[in-house]
Amino acid sequence: MTSPADGRGATGSLVAIGVVKTFAALRAVDGVSLTFNRGEILGLIGPNGSGKTTLINVLTGMLHITAGEVWVNGTNITGWAPHRIARVGLARTFQVVRLFHEFSVLENVEVAALSSGRIPRREATARAWEALERVGIAHLAPWPAAALPQGEERRVEIARALATAPEFLLLDEPGAGLTEPEVETLLATLSTIRRDLGCGILIVDHDMRLIMRLCDRIHVLNYGRTIAEGTPDEVRREPAVIEAYLGASAEAG
Ligand SMILES: Nc1ncnc2c1ncn2[C@@H]1O[C@H](COP(=O)(O)OP(=O)(O)OP(=O)(O)O)[C@@H](O)[C@H]1O
Image (cartoon, rainbow, N blue to C red; front, side, top):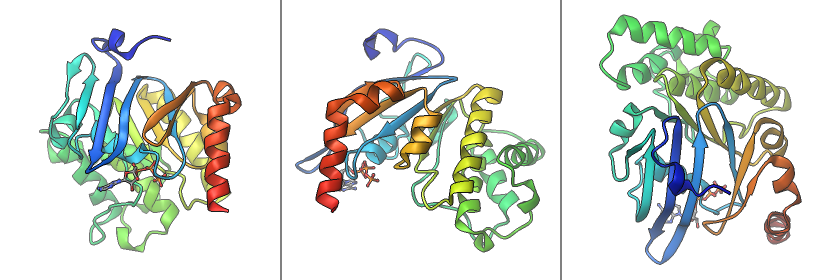
């Protein structure tokens, strides 16, 4: 296995080295290292509370890192503010969708495009239309965001992230609350985004069918630590992963 430290200078990659995030005595993320490349889809999975969202929050600067380093395209971005991190090409979506409800769908996406850097309004509008088309909801552009059903809200969130022209897209539970046909559409959309735009996609989701079919590699956390990483087949057979998930379902049951 290549050490992430070996590749931290590489262009086309996001590298986390020994990332730690504590909340008082809790080590929510406890020394996680990973490398994630443009053009690849990486799954980040683990039982509830294993540190997935916290790791995304640290990578995107929304939470202050306790220890460790984050590198993007060979630049050390550790400790940078979220807006600065967005400008080196990281975009994210949230577990709980955050749209401006009083704005139209198009305006929501335009605002995201404008926030990504100094681009004229006309270009932001063009980028917004392109992003809406890519996720298959251009027909909803004039709708007020408040009127959208949940599945469509999630697609607007992905369009907002795409409108920033990201190199790395971090998606926090994009499949949550979706029906089975909606999950199929999501799978096709994300595959197309990777193929056409070449960006890297990191996806957190509890839907294992989505993760196993979509991802090139999977990184598994439990109690803030990496317990496995590899291809879907390798991870599926890993005893530590089976135990973590069986343990979680036994506790839940
Ligand atoms: N702001 C916070 N303050 C204190 N503890 C927090 C905070 N955010 C997260 N935690 C704790 O950190 C741990 C990791 O939480 P996190 O939300 O990252 O897990 P997760 O793997 O994303 O879980 P889920 O799959 O349920 O979304 C949990 O024990 C959680 O309670």
